[in-house]
Amino acid sequence: MSLAGRVAVVSGSGRGIGRAVAEKLAAEGAAVVVNDLDEAAAKDTVAAIEAAGGAATACVGSVTEPDFGERFVQTAVDTFGGLDVVVNNAGIVRNAYLVRMTDEQWSEVLDVHLTAAFRILRAAQPVFSAEAKAEAAAGLPRSRRVVNVSSIVGTAGSPSQANYASAKSGLLGLTRTLAKEWGRYRVTVNAVAFGIIDTRMTREGGPEAQEVLRRGAAAAPLGRAGTVDEAAGAVWMLCAPEADYVTGQVLYCGGGLTSVG
Image 1 (cartoon, rainbow, N blue to C red):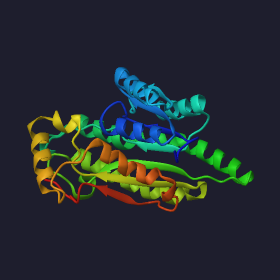
Image 2: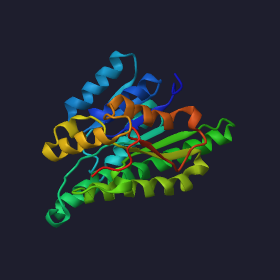
Image 3: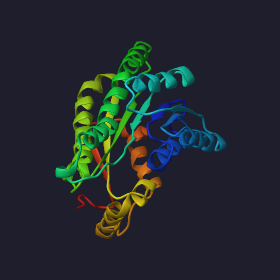
Image 4: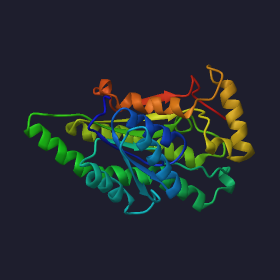
């Protein structure tokens, strides 16, 4: 297990892609802090990880709470003794064409996808810095990881998703900036841009989401939507020890699809 002894936090990991990521990291040996707005969903993920022989704990609550970043990071430090991997996965959609999009729809999506990631990473920085300095002094340097979950919508746009596209694009700017700021701490910062992944959110998102799922799956060169386990695999690729020299990059996980809508 190549992440044995490591500690990860994964936002929005009670269901879907986030849960698959949490379970994958745990299967590779990481202790995982699971987060979800729904306490039952978070605890269910924790129970599944523990039943498989892994270690996990829950940090329940909205990522948009001003103090959530500090609480999330501190849960990892207090429960498992440190922090090595941050996966910013929590997300929502509030689709509307621009002329009908409200301030609330705009702000809610940016708060969940972008502002929350910023706050979590800001809270993680002192931990990463202190641990990197201590390890360097001991002659035992180690690499750490940040993976921000973006979307092909953030690189190509999509009708009725100005808020979502802007938030996911903003995550790419945050990713590339922190890759330059945090290299000195031996932290790699990358993003995964997902295409059409078959999740509860896409299946239950109403007629528009169903149509995007259908068209995206048909348009992908692989001819289908991705699974949550395949999505988790892309995140894992950037967390693996073999990715120690990969930073500031965007990994596309869309079956060859680079644009929808």
